[in-house]
Length: 455
Image 1 (cartoon, helix red, strand yellow):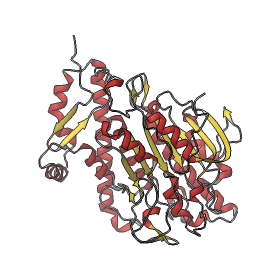
Image 2 (image 1 turned 90 degrees about the horizontal axis):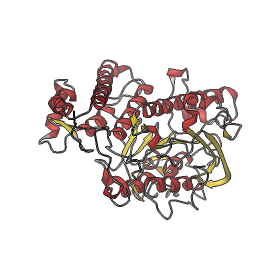
Image 3 (image 1 turned 180 degrees about the horizontal axis):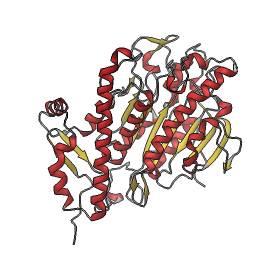
Image 4 (image 1 turned 60 degrees about the horizontal axis):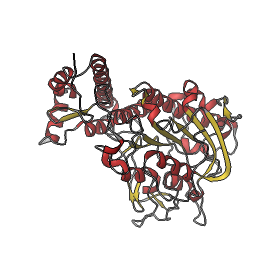
């Protein structure tokens, strides 16, 4: 039986809902020539994606940095959760964010660490409206390739925060609570509610009134799959058998995420009075589940080509969240001022390992999604780290940075690379932008491209 080609932009639609599909075998691979100027399709026709993940307060660097270099290095305690993913990973040592240093501006290291993380620009010290930083690497990429997708970029987080006022020694809260900047004075607000991300991703922009339809669907607790069922059945007649199985798996995965969000809403309602951090419906009481749900949103966004660029703040700069789920009741920020005390350093490394465990979840999810001749992770570049190395000294050199994925075959992972001290982290961003089809002359304090990512 001959199956008709299905458009790469196929959407399943229902009342107030549209669901983009992954790349099926039955879909023709788009030619490079059809991609807009600045496009980032690899020769296989699979797009490259990038995500940037921020963790606050630095790390226990002694338990982070591998001793060996090159291939076959031994993972230290904090990175052990990535053991099954070591061949998908680069550990990058020696990178620096000079503009995260005071450079004459005095205290405020935590606010600077978030502001500089993706911009490489010195933030203006102000708690007023005259904030100034620089455009971030994700937004440079979004300007170049964002028109190829429904959303130019996706900004995620797990802690809300004020956008005004003094959050750190005279620095505006806008610096502490954002890593994505569309311009010098324009931070990109992040979404912390997985329900809001889910509804935004699947709302049908052509529906009228779509907001009313979403409210109705949620009020009667219907799945989005109930609304797109007829479209899905029509599509099945056009797909090859292998793609029909993939369609079933994909829709099952979407429904599973939707059910987890619903459970979080019900759990939140029941436990709202007991929570230390009360948030709107859709935010789980368990921080680990919150992180994982947001990771799932990113995977869905990449899988359906809803966006190719994402940022994710695991927590805001200077976060003093406790981690009772791993037996750490002290605040993270307070612990980061450890003064060399062994007990505090042990708690910090446990927090660091918890964060890396969530990263491992994200990478495993990306690797589990088949795409082209490989996996979704193969097309990605996932940059994870902090703009502080040691939270006690507030230093900005030898930053803890990981890069996962193969960038569509342009990166050779599985190695620990050590760079010369004071190598700008923005040099890494320049190299990633090249691979995304978003090359630029400079970003922040870059001095060139980062060598060694590909052998």
